Length: 341
Image (cartoon, rainbow, N blue to C red):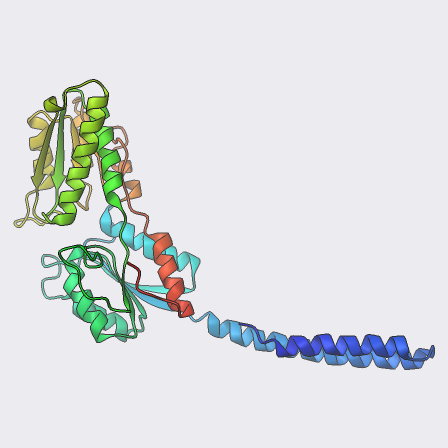
C-alpha cells in the first residue's frame, strides 16, 4: 500500500503556488518567485514519495517461498508433473521460489518421511506447503498442527469432505484443493464407448480406495451411456478392470502396467483406459497400434500425455493445478489465506 501523505502535500504545494500566482501583482518578479518555490518543494516531495514507494515496493516483492511434495518423479508426464508445473505457474505469475522434492515414496526414498520433508522445507523458509498425494494425508495433518503459522494445502483425499470416511477436524492453516475428476472420467469413458469396435474396454487402475473406485465407476457409466447411445445393448459391453497396487509401477511390489496392458489387448480389449499416474498404458497401446492392431487409449492426469502416442489417444482428462495454486499463494502473500474446502 502506498503512503498517502506525500501525495497530499504535493497537491497542496501546487495549489498554493497557483493561488499566489493568481493573487499576486502583475510584477514578473513576484510571479516568478512564487512559482519556482512551489516547483522546488514539489520536486523534493515527489522524490521523497518515489523513494518511499520504491522502498515499500522492494519490501512487498520479497519472494514467497513454498514447498512442493511429489509422490512420483517431477517429469513423469502424469500426476506429479502436473503438480510440479502448477508450482512453476506460481513462479511465473508471482514473486515466488519453489522448494521441491519428488519421489517421496517407500520404494524410491525408503528412509524419507513426508513429515520430515515438510519440517525441512519450513526450516528453509517455506510459508506454504503443497502435499500432493493421498499418501501424505497423515503427514500434512500432523505438520499443520506442528506449524500453525505455515499454510498448507492437501491436494487429494477425502479429509476435507464432511461426509467422507477420512474426514478430520478443521485446521485453520490446512486447506484442500482437488479437481472434480469424476466428470472428466465420465467423458473419457464416453469417448471409449463411442470408439470401441467390439464392446471390450479395459481400465488399468492404481491402488483401491474410495476415490479410485469413484473414478472407475464414472468411466464405466460414461462408456455404457455412449455405447448404448449408438444403439448397442449395454449388456454386450465388457468393461474390465485390473488394479496394479499403487499409483505407479514399483518393480517387485506392483503389477507391471505394461504387462497388464498387453494382457488386456491380448484378451480382446480394443480401448485401454489408464487410472495410474504414469504413461505406460498409452505408450504400450501406441506400440501395439504401430504393429498393426486397431487399439486406442485414454491416458490420465497430465495435459501433454497424448503426446506419448497421439495416433491412438482419444483425449485425456487432466488436472490444471496452476490457477488454484496461484490463488492460494496470493492469499498467503497478502495475509488472507483461509482453509479452502
